[in-house]
Image 1: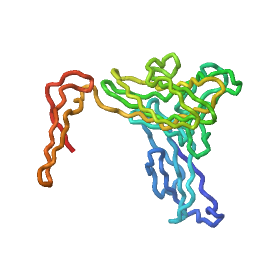
Image 2: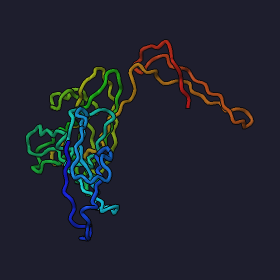
Image 3: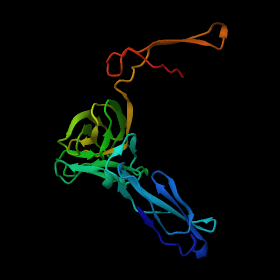
Image 4: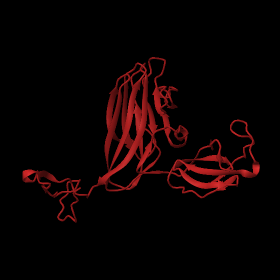
Amino acid sequence: MKLTWAAPTTGVHDGYVTPADLNYTVVRMPDSVAVATHTTERSLTETLPTEQMVNYYYRVTPFNGDIEGQTAESNRLTLGSIVEVPWQEDFEDLSVVPNMFTFIDANRDGCTWRSGRWNGNGNADVYYQYNEDQVTPADDWLMTPPVHLKPGRFYTISFDLNGYFLGTEKVSAWMGDDKTAAAMTTRLLDTQVIDFSEQRNYSCLIKNDADGIRYFGFHAESDADQGILELDNIRIEENGLFDAPDTVTNFVVTPASYGARAATVSFTAPVHDFYGNPITTLDKIELY
């Protein structure tokens, strides 16, 4: 990755700058890593990992000696082919949408998912807007970038949905091995009906048997002549191993008599893992 920039010729308020005193601090985003501090060069080259999908950009702040100037941002460039868990997207950087997400206009009516700041409160998201012909229902998919899931693990995907603009929206969530509608074979969330101005957060548990790449799809399926369906704050997290011990049961804390600062803790150790298979030994039980 090579970054170049031009030197400022005036100050923020058209003041004077001394070219010989100019220096720059460069921060790589979105991981907020300072890759150069008070350098006098006006270019920078670094090698970045190419497996994890990241939408990179840089912030360059000029200094006139030790007087800080106005920060500029570079263009965005997406590197990598997959995302690793944990992963989240709040869409505040809207440039990630064309670089990492896929929209499918399944009914080919010219109306599909979009990205922007539709709700006017400064919050960016992706949204489906109804067809104004008043007769065509929604049949449109939003697909995430490819996500690497490891075998023998539970995962959780959570997201926010919001109905907007005088309509009743319908949406479902799916998982598949490719970013096509036909590949969305695992239903994670049954069709939900979301009324106008209703905001909901959803969380879906995923049981993943085999190592591989998965895509997550959000299917807008509202009736004709509805409103706006907004999607925001997608998060995917690991949520335990299949063979991890299940929770303890009969958990009781009994305080000591006469106000003594002590207590007796008792419980029954698990005899099955999360997947229901019997376990015969436990290495330890942590209490905190």
